[in-house]
Length: 125
Image 1 (cartoon, rainbow, N blue to C red):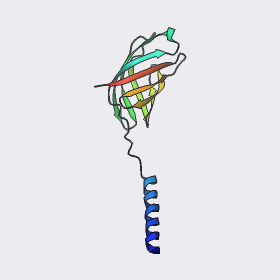
Image 2: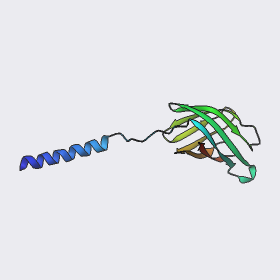
Image 3: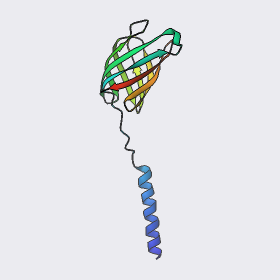
Image 4: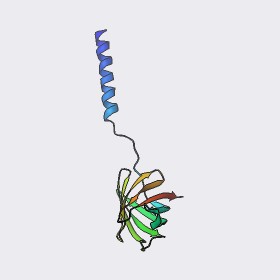
């Protein structure tokens, strides 16, 4: 009887240790593909427009081309995105940087700058 209790306690402890130390099966976002959406300055009177991107991801880096309309200054061209979990850091050679969060087929976040803006992108299927 004592052996059975010890065996049962041992199995419970072992099962608990396995459950708490097992890696999560979280899938990493894949940014490869076409994305389209909108951007708007936080100060609405400054403007808004559309964004289209085509990205190819390798590891934690995605590169591609971005076309931005409605901007007072042309911001279209090459784009690089660094992925860390669901967080995306946008590095854009013509002056746009920002932080986005990926959730499924959507990216939302903020563009940095003198006049920050919000962006919402959806994967095009």
